[in-house]
Amino acid sequence: MTGTIRLTKLSLKRESVNPAATKKRRVFARPSIAVGNALQTGGILAACFALMASRSTRSTAIAVTSMLLAWVLLYFSSHAIAHWLVGRAVGIRFLFYTVGGTGNPEGWPPGLRGIFEHLPFFGVQTEKLSMQNVGPGARALMWSAGVTSSAVIPTLSAFLAWRSGVPWSGWFCLFAVFWAFGTLASNWTSRTGDYSKARRALSHS
Image (tube, rainbow, N blue to C red; front, side, top):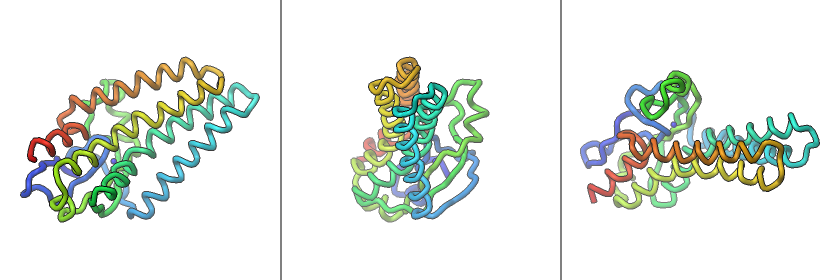
């Protein structure tokens, strides 16, 4: 899913990794790493079952609903765990997960800002010492993993639904592609987005 991140030695205390982190982010819960991983893994597995159901059912309504459910589950379940997976691979440790709304309303269109401030995005809290001990490239990889995952993986599910001939999947795949590009573009230009944090990490190398 927490404060503004400054990638300097003085500010590498407790950094929060979330879809749009700012100090105003509303946090609803702080599950442990084990619980957070279990919840997100469960969401990803549920998305896989939903996608399989959309491909096998003869009911158009069930197929479309299952396809949409798979996309939503992957969108909310693939972000923070990607930070955690890549972070652990490069030597970064984490303290706990957070669940809360977006803290970056400027990254969303006006009609969606209020809604996304109340949606359950996962974030994950980094550990100070491990952030200090890894290089700028490792931090940049960790920062970039979340938004990249939440843009690519849900879109891949829509593509697979289209390839399997799920009803209305062609139009939905187009929507998913545009949504993914919008997610990447807004995150790239946002001052608090993951890509901005990655660029700041590299600039302090």
